[in-house]
Image (cartoon, rainbow over all chains, first blue to last red; front, side):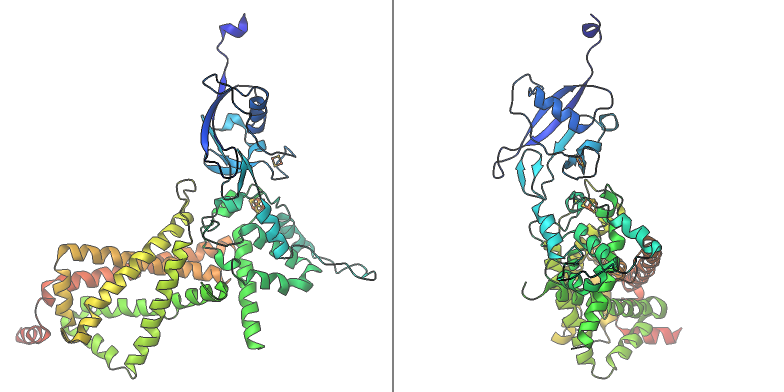
Length: 254
Length: 223
Ligand code: SF4
Ligand code: FES
């Protein structure tokens, strides 16, 4: 038969696994039959269907998270061949084999490739990454945003809280309380909004504390890693300028 | 660390440039006078500095205390950082790691260097007049000379790259273009200050500084 005549092409994986958050990590190798246009998620689905290791022994299916499958939700972020990125947009044809999959271990690892990005949502709450419009009466329409501003602000709004920039940052670690690049860029986004601007100082104050913007050490890995191409280092430098101004204003008005 | 780290970090950043960066340039120029003016030139520069009014307080507030704070807090910053140049092999990321490595090297070197030179004057083992030949004795040892070369390059890198980061951290260079221009300028500063220090090291190592200044002066006038 044709199938046995030509050796089936396979894709090799080395996956870092762990059973519980506290358990020690270990690696397992897998060989998955190749299909054209495969991505890392479809390969993981294949392993889920047939959880057999490369050595032929059965194992527990590998756990991972995914949702949108089009690189907009950020749920499937993991470290693929050393770089943090989205598994759903990581095409097998473009990856060097064996493909090494690891969890983004800057975050607490729940199981296998599943991580807990809670700290990112806490960070957004801390910096008040929203526009307060609630009141007891209708406040009416807010001021308009200039088109020239809207264009760059829109780029910042593409952040999907995927965590890649935190994983890439050498200053986001267990010895450091740095909030990470994503939340700082969101402060710039909400401070640029004509209504959001009315509470700009509150967001800046949150970044002028322990673990705030001072934690940035200018490695600039974030801007090179962000899958959405968000100008994170420009945002950080702009907020550095705003916090500096706020610092002097506070001092002089004391 | 107690207190709001935003202020400590800002102070650390400021002290690195004013006064420490300025002191570093002054130090490079003073040493360079050894290359340009020989024994006498270096002696004149040292005399000029020590003729300044309130020199003890100048040293205290422009040099000792800032170095102490910048150095100790800098060690804490280095402790808080990871290095991931393996997976993120980018120029800026290397500079990030090198900034911490050179910072530690510089701090250790400065402690040793101050002990060997400034404190020896305080202890009365040498005088400001004899500093030139004192330096000659120190750098005549090839191992020490090599250590001086490495330390001087580390310190200059730390200053130049720190200046680049200072401009970002205070929000002066915001966009990638501005940061590229400031990178070129800082690279230029690194090259110039390194050359000044290296030339003065070679001058101190040369025979010109082998003997005490008086002999050098008489032999110079005999020519
Ligand atoms: S800024 Fe980019 S890398 Fe960071 S969380 Fe948002 S989308 Fe992900
Ligand atoms: S599944 Fe949503 S980004 Fe990959």
